[in-house]
Image (cartoon, rainbow, N blue to C red; front, side, top):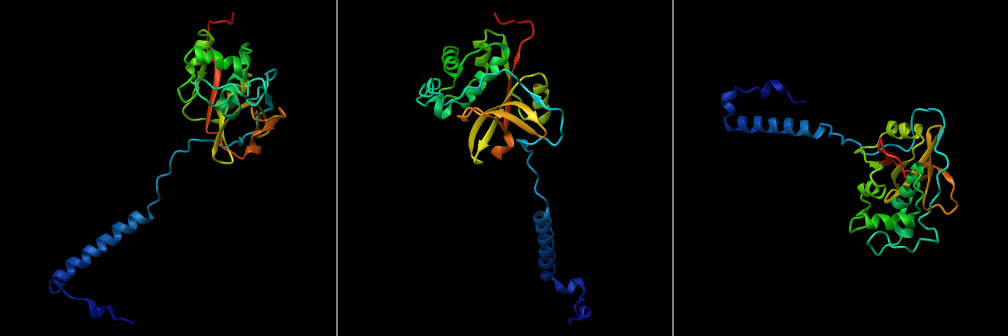
Length: 224
Protein backbone atom coordinates (compact mmCIF):
# COMPACT_ATOMS: atom_id res chain seq x y z
CA UNK A 1 0.00 0.00 0.00
CA UNK A 2 1.23 3.46 -0.84
CA UNK A 3 1.49 5.90 2.06
CA UNK A 4 -0.19 9.04 0.79
CA UNK A 5 1.58 11.10 3.42
CA UNK A 6 4.83 10.69 1.48
CA UNK A 7 3.18 12.18 -1.59
CA UNK A 8 2.21 15.46 0.04
CA UNK A 9 4.59 18.02 -1.43
CA UNK A 10 4.36 21.76 -1.16
CA UNK A 11 2.70 23.11 -4.28
CA UNK A 12 5.69 25.34 -5.13
CA UNK A 13 8.04 22.36 -5.27
CA UNK A 14 6.11 20.68 -8.06
CA UNK A 15 6.56 23.45 -10.62
CA UNK A 16 5.50 22.50 -14.16
CA UNK A 17 4.33 19.08 -13.03
CA UNK A 18 1.59 20.66 -10.97
CA UNK A 19 0.15 22.55 -13.93
CA UNK A 20 0.22 19.40 -16.05
CA UNK A 21 -1.43 17.34 -13.30
CA UNK A 22 -4.15 19.90 -12.70
CA UNK A 23 -4.80 20.14 -16.44
CA UNK A 24 -5.18 16.37 -16.67
CA UNK A 25 -7.60 16.31 -13.74
CA UNK A 26 -9.73 19.01 -15.39
CA UNK A 27 -9.71 17.20 -18.75
CA UNK A 28 -10.66 13.87 -17.18
CA UNK A 29 -13.46 15.49 -15.18
CA UNK A 30 -14.76 17.35 -18.25
CA UNK A 31 -14.54 14.30 -20.44
CA UNK A 32 -16.29 11.99 -17.99
CA UNK A 33 -18.98 14.55 -17.45
CA UNK A 34 -19.70 14.53 -21.16
CA UNK A 35 -19.29 10.79 -21.45
CA UNK A 36 -21.89 10.04 -18.82
CA UNK A 37 -24.29 12.79 -19.73
CA UNK A 38 -27.44 11.24 -21.14
CA UNK A 39 -28.04 12.16 -24.78
CA UNK A 40 -31.09 14.23 -25.55
CA UNK A 41 -33.95 12.08 -26.60
CA UNK A 42 -35.38 12.94 -29.98
CA UNK A 43 -39.05 13.69 -29.98
CA UNK A 44 -40.84 10.64 -31.31
CA UNK A 45 -42.58 11.33 -34.58
CA UNK A 46 -44.68 8.15 -34.70
CA UNK A 47 -47.19 6.49 -32.38
CA UNK A 48 -47.85 2.88 -31.53
CA UNK A 49 -50.50 1.01 -33.49
CA UNK A 50 -52.07 0.05 -30.15
CA UNK A 51 -53.96 2.61 -28.07
CA UNK A 52 -53.48 2.27 -24.30
CA UNK A 53 -56.96 3.37 -23.43
CA UNK A 54 -60.05 1.38 -24.31
CA UNK A 55 -62.95 3.59 -25.42
CA UNK A 56 -66.11 2.02 -26.88
CA UNK A 57 -65.92 0.08 -30.12
CA UNK A 58 -66.02 2.38 -33.14
CA UNK A 59 -66.49 1.65 -36.82
CA UNK A 60 -67.03 3.71 -39.96
CA UNK A 61 -69.70 1.97 -42.04
CA UNK A 62 -70.69 1.88 -45.70
CA UNK A 63 -67.37 2.76 -47.29
CA UNK A 64 -66.18 1.04 -50.48
CA UNK A 65 -63.14 -1.23 -50.33
CA UNK A 66 -60.82 -0.23 -53.17
CA UNK A 67 -57.74 -2.23 -54.02
CA UNK A 68 -54.75 -0.81 -55.85
CA UNK A 69 -54.33 -4.28 -57.38
CA UNK A 70 -57.87 -4.38 -58.81
CA UNK A 71 -57.66 -5.70 -62.39
CA UNK A 72 -59.80 -2.79 -63.60
CA UNK A 73 -57.05 -0.25 -62.89
CA UNK A 74 -53.95 -2.03 -61.63
CA UNK A 75 -52.07 -1.23 -64.86
CA UNK A 76 -53.10 2.44 -64.90
CA UNK A 77 -50.12 4.82 -64.51
CA UNK A 78 -50.15 6.91 -61.34
CA UNK A 79 -50.28 10.62 -62.11
CA UNK A 80 -47.69 11.55 -64.73
CA UNK A 81 -45.30 8.72 -63.84
CA UNK A 82 -44.59 5.36 -65.43
CA UNK A 83 -45.45 3.50 -62.23
CA UNK A 84 -48.70 1.58 -61.96
CA UNK A 85 -51.43 1.82 -59.36
CA UNK A 86 -50.73 -1.82 -58.49
CA UNK A 87 -47.21 -0.85 -57.43
CA UNK A 88 -47.68 2.57 -55.84
CA UNK A 89 -51.40 3.32 -55.66
CA UNK A 90 -52.02 2.77 -51.95
CA UNK A 91 -52.37 6.46 -51.03
CA UNK A 92 -54.68 7.12 -53.96
CA UNK A 93 -56.86 4.10 -53.13
CA UNK A 94 -57.19 5.09 -49.47
CA UNK A 95 -58.07 8.65 -50.46
CA UNK A 96 -60.76 7.43 -52.85
CA UNK A 97 -62.30 5.37 -50.05
CA UNK A 98 -62.14 8.28 -47.61
CA UNK A 99 -63.84 10.65 -50.06
CA UNK A 100 -66.82 8.30 -50.25
CA UNK A 101 -67.67 9.38 -46.70
CA UNK A 102 -68.86 12.65 -48.27
CA UNK A 103 -70.61 11.18 -51.29
CA UNK A 104 -67.70 11.24 -53.78
CA UNK A 105 -67.84 7.75 -55.22
CA UNK A 106 -64.72 7.94 -57.37
CA UNK A 107 -62.73 4.74 -57.77
CA UNK A 108 -58.90 4.99 -57.88
CA UNK A 109 -58.83 5.19 -61.67
CA UNK A 110 -61.38 8.01 -61.78
CA UNK A 111 -59.72 9.92 -58.94
CA UNK A 112 -56.35 9.52 -60.65
CA UNK A 113 -57.73 11.13 -63.82
CA UNK A 114 -59.30 14.03 -61.96
CA UNK A 115 -56.17 14.72 -59.91
CA UNK A 116 -54.08 14.80 -63.09
CA UNK A 117 -56.38 17.50 -64.44
CA UNK A 118 -56.27 19.52 -61.20
CA UNK A 119 -52.52 19.50 -60.48
CA UNK A 120 -52.93 16.82 -57.84
CA UNK A 121 -49.58 15.07 -58.30
CA UNK A 122 -45.91 15.96 -58.12
CA UNK A 123 -43.68 14.81 -60.97
CA UNK A 124 -42.68 11.87 -58.78
CA UNK A 125 -46.29 10.84 -58.36
CA UNK A 126 -46.76 12.01 -54.79
CA UNK A 127 -50.28 13.15 -54.05
CA UNK A 128 -50.66 16.90 -53.56
CA UNK A 129 -53.32 17.03 -50.87
CA UNK A 130 -54.68 20.40 -51.95
CA UNK A 131 -55.68 18.64 -55.17
CA UNK A 132 -58.61 17.09 -53.29
CA UNK A 133 -59.87 20.60 -52.57
CA UNK A 134 -59.78 21.37 -56.30
CA UNK A 135 -61.31 18.06 -57.39
CA UNK A 136 -64.21 18.61 -54.97
CA UNK A 137 -64.67 22.17 -56.24
CA UNK A 138 -63.75 23.65 -52.88
CA UNK A 139 -66.05 21.46 -50.80
CA UNK A 140 -63.47 19.19 -49.17
CA UNK A 141 -60.04 19.64 -47.66
CA UNK A 142 -57.41 17.27 -46.35
CA UNK A 143 -56.08 17.84 -42.84
CA UNK A 144 -52.35 17.07 -42.55
CA UNK A 145 -51.16 17.25 -38.92
CA UNK A 146 -47.41 17.40 -38.30
CA UNK A 147 -47.49 14.57 -35.78
CA UNK A 148 -50.11 11.84 -35.33
CA UNK A 149 -51.84 11.31 -32.00
CA UNK A 150 -54.37 8.73 -30.86
CA UNK A 151 -56.67 11.54 -29.77
CA UNK A 152 -56.82 12.84 -33.35
CA UNK A 153 -57.65 9.40 -34.73
CA UNK A 154 -60.30 8.69 -32.11
CA UNK A 155 -61.95 12.08 -32.57
CA UNK A 156 -62.36 11.42 -36.30
CA UNK A 157 -63.65 7.89 -35.80
CA UNK A 158 -66.21 9.29 -33.35
CA UNK A 159 -67.42 11.49 -36.23
CA UNK A 160 -67.65 8.40 -38.49
CA UNK A 161 -64.72 9.76 -40.47
CA UNK A 162 -61.97 7.36 -41.64
CA UNK A 163 -58.29 8.22 -41.19
CA UNK A 164 -55.59 7.65 -43.81
CA UNK A 165 -52.47 6.34 -42.05
CA UNK A 166 -48.87 5.80 -43.11
CA UNK A 167 -47.26 2.64 -41.78
CA UNK A 168 -44.27 0.51 -42.72
CA UNK A 169 -44.40 -3.03 -44.08
CA UNK A 170 -41.59 -5.26 -42.80
CA UNK A 171 -40.29 -2.23 -40.92
CA UNK A 172 -39.01 -0.43 -44.04
CA UNK A 173 -41.48 -0.23 -46.96
CA UNK A 174 -43.85 2.76 -46.66
CA UNK A 175 -47.51 1.89 -47.12
CA UNK A 176 -50.82 3.70 -46.56
CA UNK A 177 -53.94 2.09 -45.10
CA UNK A 178 -57.36 3.39 -44.08
CA UNK A 179 -58.34 3.28 -40.41
CA UNK A 180 -62.08 2.64 -40.31
CA UNK A 181 -62.69 1.71 -36.69
CA UNK A 182 -61.45 0.48 -33.37
CA UNK A 183 -61.80 -2.75 -31.43
CA UNK A 184 -60.51 -2.76 -27.88
CA UNK A 185 -57.03 -1.24 -28.04
CA UNK A 186 -56.57 -2.03 -31.72
CA UNK A 187 -57.47 -0.15 -34.89
CA UNK A 188 -59.48 -1.67 -37.72
CA UNK A 189 -58.14 -0.99 -41.21
CA UNK A 190 -58.77 -1.50 -44.89
CA UNK A 191 -55.59 -2.38 -46.77
CA UNK A 192 -55.55 -1.60 -50.52
CA UNK A 193 -53.15 -4.54 -50.99
CA UNK A 194 -55.42 -7.11 -49.35
CA UNK A 195 -56.94 -9.19 -52.12
CA UNK A 196 -59.37 -10.75 -49.62
CA UNK A 197 -60.79 -7.33 -48.72
CA UNK A 198 -60.83 -8.10 -45.03
CA UNK A 199 -61.16 -5.60 -42.21
CA UNK A 200 -57.86 -6.24 -40.45
CA UNK A 201 -56.30 -5.33 -37.13
CA UNK A 202 -53.50 -2.83 -37.50
CA UNK A 203 -51.43 -4.72 -34.92
CA UNK A 204 -51.04 -7.54 -37.48
CA UNK A 205 -48.63 -5.28 -39.37
CA UNK A 206 -46.28 -4.73 -36.41
CA UNK A 207 -45.81 -1.10 -37.37
CA UNK A 208 -46.07 2.29 -35.74
CA UNK A 209 -48.28 4.95 -37.27
CA UNK A 210 -45.95 7.51 -38.84
CA UNK A 211 -48.39 10.00 -40.32
CA UNK A 212 -52.12 10.53 -40.66
CA UNK A 213 -54.48 12.42 -42.94
CA UNK A 214 -58.21 12.87 -42.94
CA UNK A 215 -60.73 14.57 -45.17
CA UNK A 216 -63.32 16.98 -43.88
CA UNK A 217 -66.15 18.94 -45.41
CA UNK A 218 -65.73 22.69 -45.50
CA UNK A 219 -68.51 24.41 -43.59
CA UNK A 220 -71.16 26.10 -45.69
CA UNK A 221 -70.67 23.90 -48.74
CA UNK A 222 -72.71 21.03 -50.12
CA UNK A 223 -72.03 18.41 -52.76
CA UNK A 224 -74.06 19.08 -55.90
